[in-house]
Amino acid sequence: MDIDVMRTAMLNCELFSGLEQNDLGGLMMSARPRSFLDGETIYSKGDKAAGVFALIASGKVEAVAENGFVVAEMRVGEVIGEVGIISRQGKRTVTVKVVGPTELLEWNIKDIQESSPNFVKKLKELAWKRLKNWYE
Image (cartoon, rainbow, N blue to C red; front, side, top):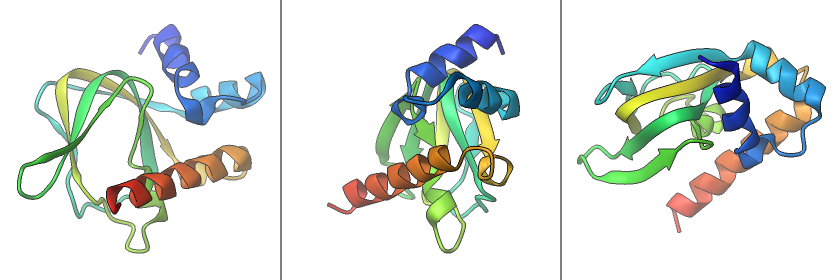
């Protein structure tokens, strides 16, 4: 994945706003780029989350309920998988599928929690906010 695509996606995400350049650079270095084709499943409801979350760097994804209903569409600059990090069961709460070619930047929270504690705190706050919005 092109480094400019990575940087642009991170800078367009509120979660990364306010980070120092060193922190942003460290997160870029620890990111695992992943590419998906149209229709691929990133993860399924019930999958083990294992502390992994991702930022959409290009493309679009849909969160799909068990009945096939699309509960959310997420685009460049949005985070996926953060709810699995705070879940007691540590499992995915929805199935996430790709719509068109999509690139993600993926992290494991265990790899960044010591070097970026403020970022991890913001990530968990985002997860709680998203959960709250689902149940309202």
